[in-house]
Image 1 (cartoon, each protein chain N blue to C red):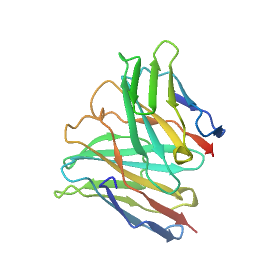
Image 2: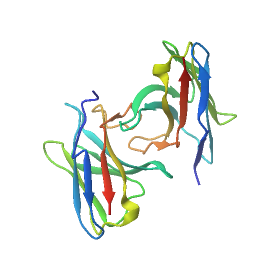
Image 3: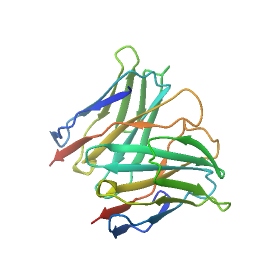
Image 4: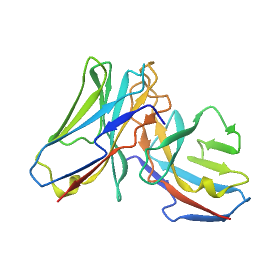
Length: 113
Length: 115
């Protein structure tokens, strides 16, 4: 069955450093991948979408890579700030319309001042 | 603010009861998705509606049902509630292409607690 793995342990980093979060998947061939941010008690907020034919996508301090050979996506936050502390979810999407997104369980990021 | 509104924010009820969760999508969005989020399971897709029609079904129990009304708001009905149904229930909507290959805009959820 489809499986998405994100680090269940929290990632602790210092302000100003680059945070790198990993999303690995098996038994799936997604057409695209999305990253979301979720704060406690709030709904997920969309950050970035990357398609299978794209290697890298950037948006301000955020960068996402997508390696379909390794079946892995990396999510980077450069010059991290305490306000970046949150849980980050990756979600995989299928090849035809109306297919569900499959979400990972998320990785909690803690950025200390 | 995502523009997606969910009510109520909190719901406390007992086993065996029935509840209705309500979602209003962003203005202009035609698709509504329902998700369940529990501590050990993460976000689980339940069901999707597009312009009033059911489009995709996920791990939705037979005790659960949903519908989307002509004004595009949606309701998720949960019946014969069990302790394990305690979770956060999220609704999301997408732009009116009908394609799930779009960013999803989530409401802030309804927290359901079964006593």
